[in-house]
Amino acid sequence: MNPVRTIGILSLGCPKNLVDSEAILADYLKKGFKVIDEPGKADVVVVNTCAFIEDAKKESIDVILDLIQLKKEGRIKKIIVAGCLPQRYEKVLRKELTEVDIFHGVRDFKKDNPDERLLITPAHYAYIKISEGCDNKCSYCIISQIRGRYRSRPKEIVLKEINDLYANSGGELKEINLISQDLTYYGMDLYKKYALPDLLGSIDKKIKWVRLLYAHPAHFTDELILAIKESPRICKYIDLPVQHINDRLLKSMGRKITKKGIFDLIAKLRKNIPGIAIRSSLIVGLPGETDKEFKELLEFIKDIKFERLGIFTYSREEDTPAFNFKNQVSDKEKRRRLDEAMKLQQEISKGINASFIGKTLEILIDEKQDDATFIGRTYADAPEVDGQVFVKVGANGHSPLHIGNFVDVKVTDTLEYDLVGEAV
Image (cartoon, rainbow, N blue to C red; front, side, top):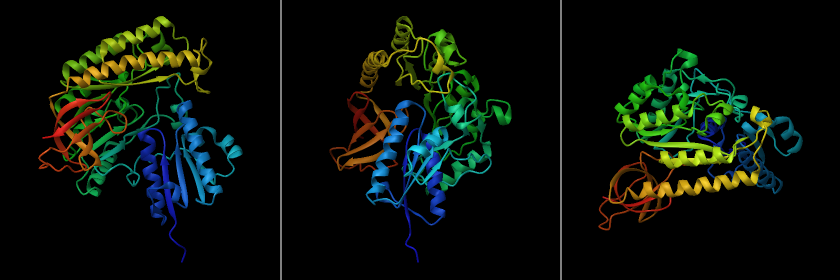
């Protein structure tokens, strides 16, 4: 008999990639492979790559080169490179990286049948992909070319996947994070309407936290605001990428929304959903961004005071319209603008965190740091991308904590982006 072959996976990039990685592992499990947590010790290693921006491409290539070195040393036998990088550059990769055994583009999207998945995440939370692809075709973005047109998954299939994951977790699943390149567009291709509110209303009440990741502001409806407001299970948290605030740049980016539309939407969200935490993302150094337009962006950050904010430099991607735009900003100036914007947001984050000192918050425990400290999150923090809460076990020791459980925590201190507290 042949010995059982082992497989490991390195999943790079966004949660959408992670869901694909979980499906890849399930495929190999059915083929008789044993999945191990340390990819460098496996017979076969899959790296599921990202090619969204330049930094992601560099990270993917560096990981592949490290695996090639392990293969040369005889520590692994086969390398499989999957995902966005080979989808975008397969011919070049085949020519340059001959040590790679298999190249495979993005995973075929099964619209009518959920993939079996072997969860990489802890048992208490999971990601649910409700669509694939994108129709927005923002001028700076390559995703629509890599992932194709927008395809919603039927509501009943999404609900079946959630129910199956809950059942397979033995009731441990506490949080689902709905993901898509454009959550708020969900259903337009299948049902000819924005159907995210309908989907949210049908999710089983056994799931305590339902989180929305990447909600395009141009497709945000009053019905969705109402759904978030009225359901105690939908986290009062919105990932709302606005990218910029200047009208000229919003138009050149193809964002389908104006400065006024963004301000009005944020005001409506905060008025109608008490306690809402808004995460956003912004791009500095877009082609043609003037000093005045950058200052306008800084004023926007000051005015809005996002609870969570990611700021990125523009990545000039070939095969996108913005690649050929005039007045490209230098890398040095992009970095300078990024530093200035990040310093501003750091001060805002410190102020927001300071407001929690002395308050008691409900925390979902994610991991154990040591015997005296656990790490968790509030409803306002998505896994992997937002802040954490360092939870000290009470001095009397009568409140043992467990991964995947909710606990009340009194905030006693703050870090730059994180909180520190004591279980009560």
